[in-house]
Image 1 (spheres, rainbow, N blue to C red):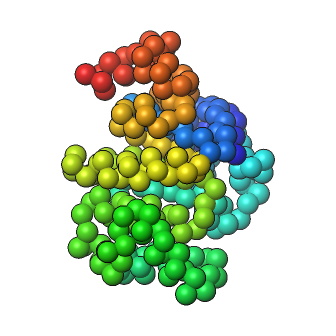
Image 2 (cartoon, one colour; image 1 turned 180 degrees about the horizontal axis):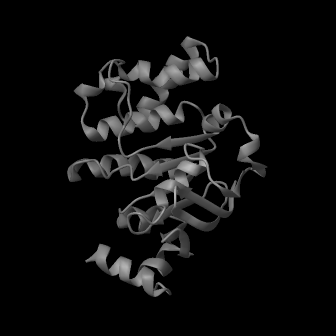
Length: 239
């Protein structure tokens, strides 16, 4: 579904990605872990071309993403950010139906019906006419997930989706993501939630200093990492 080959990304003189290689199969959940500044978020932003990269290739379903119209690409690759990025002047329903109607020319009636179904799925149908300021952080993030799903993406990217939430709200967002993974969505998730990584990931990828240092099944990476850098990171985060 997704193939990344020798990806390099610089910000001025700072090289953030130094030759990342990664393949993701359809319906696979990949959890990306690693220290801050290691390139995790930058990698996700390159996949949907929020950041342009200097060299290397990214293929979506065998097609170089540079050959895909950027707006079309973003209908196929959904992204959920740390901050929820909901439009504050629109209610939940309006936030959900805007993009499919504008970008995909979806009829309003169909968009509203789809929004109802997705809000039911994330447990927020009762908030359909609420405005973002009336929602908790966890509810906002679940709305953001539903909004991304409105475009019927083939791949979902999550960039530390629970890091801005109060601890007691984290579980409700992770539960939605877990259900999404179980339904067969292809997902790349940058997170520090090791319980989620252990329970939901097909593979954990450890990125540090701009490269993939180690990858493997959760059992192996969390309990028996091979690289010293992975061991040090996990020792700190699992203490």
